[in-house]
Image 1 (tube, helix red, strand yellow):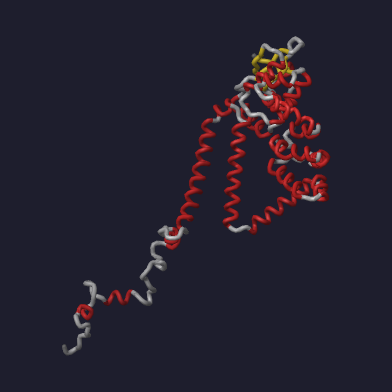
Image 2 (cartoon, one colour; image 1 turned 135 degrees about the vertical axis):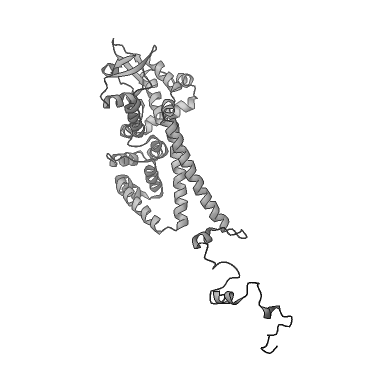
Length: 353
């Protein structure tokens, strides 16, 4: 059914972390083909109002595009039941922090006990307890930056959370010093690694000026890349390819719905084939050179291809033009050896013989 946007109550927007990349893709998709998947709502207490359960990104994009209505499916159940059903049915992977936000709402606002949460979500009590504990570690400012996408959820789980557990004040200082800067997972990892390696003074300086550290770290890395050998740069490139593959895998699992896959099947297939072909050429090039340099291996045509068909400098038994010039060859008869060479005694024929 069609619901006007002003009829929606967006009371659960805080249960999801922002995904700017996914929203840009969704914007392009809605511009191209329109809304294909309805949002999920339940009836609110006020007549004519609906509580949005799933589809916050779609609603935000439709508002940006100037739409007044949204295609929706109405579930005939309570809000808590709808949230639990969405937990079991949604296709995209959630971050651990998003699980924690949902559990906190169900525990504090809906009054579900630890045992009931574990049973209703088909998880263990330990799983529920660990995620509820995250809310006690991260401050409201940290959670807000994660929810807005300024700190990626993966970076918060891998680096910010351990830092907050080790020293909550340092974590608070670092997050506050970021201001409006948006971090990548790699940048947060560099900050965390530097924090662990530093002494007390260094940690204080790092947490108070993280952006300065990132700037200096990037300059040092660029300088090191300029001094690296070809092999080192190639190894770095291969490591970058591995990182890109891992990032693409996470994106394929977490940022793209089944409906988006269906709409972009041909584009994804073409991009995958291009990536596979490029990497196959790289593997072939590396394997060719490794085999060429292997002791006892037959030499390939790499060097001869560079020299061209007329270059015989590397051929055994050949000499310079001064040693075997065209004049020697022209004086020999077409039959091969000279008459002197055919004489058994090898003596030269005299003029009076």
